[in-house]
Amino acid sequence: MKCYIARPDPILLFLIIFFFGCIPERKLILPNFNNFNINSYCYENQIKMKTEIVNKISSKTDEVIKACMDVEKKRFHLTAILNKTNGKSKIITYEMYMIDDMAYVWSSFKPEWIKFRINEKRWEEENVMRKQIQFIQFSNIRKIKKGGMYLLKINPPPMDFWNIIMLQTGEHPLLKLLNINYADAIKEMNMEIWTTKDFYPLKCNMQMKAIIKGKMLKKPFRMIINIKSKYKYWNHNKPLNIQLPEKAKHAKMYVEEE
Image (cartoon, rainbow, N blue to C red):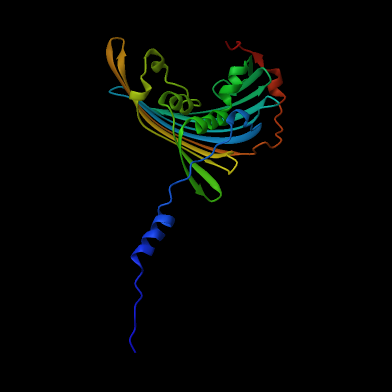
């Protein structure tokens, strides 16, 4: 008895590959983020940064931030542990509450509660999720559906990316003296956001390498910055019980924010 091996029809094989293996990615339809409100959430932010001023000094910073924000009730609580190595290792812990138009801060560097007035701009700055959501709307996005989530790969404008990745760590004081061309300075940048199917952020990973060149006091200046920042989000639109502790209620008044 002869045995025959069936060979696939080349035309049929072509059609299978074309329709099932090479389907163009559908364009992601995004909601109107002007009407997209997440009124409360919690997050953790892990930051690793290395800064090197060529031929001078280098430093490493590891920071872990945990925070909860209630946008509607204007309640915010943040704790952080900062480990900075600049020849010697130095660990600083700090805590902050924002209640309406007042901020309350405690630091192990100066272990006493102080308070100062804040404005609406400060609330916008601390609403990190909102800032990241805006990148989803205005950036080029590639969609990958993965485990019931969306993985959004984003290519934001360099200056906007710089501002958001440096939000928690703050700029090096020397950089304020330079007129930085961000598009030229940023050599590597990567931003990914994982969201639910309703585009509620779950994770955000950012990475940047920048080389800052210029003149400082008429001498050549070159700084290399490497930074990685990872966010995790939870408790979207859940009730949050953020209460000012008794010791903070007796905080000393500091200076008003401008």
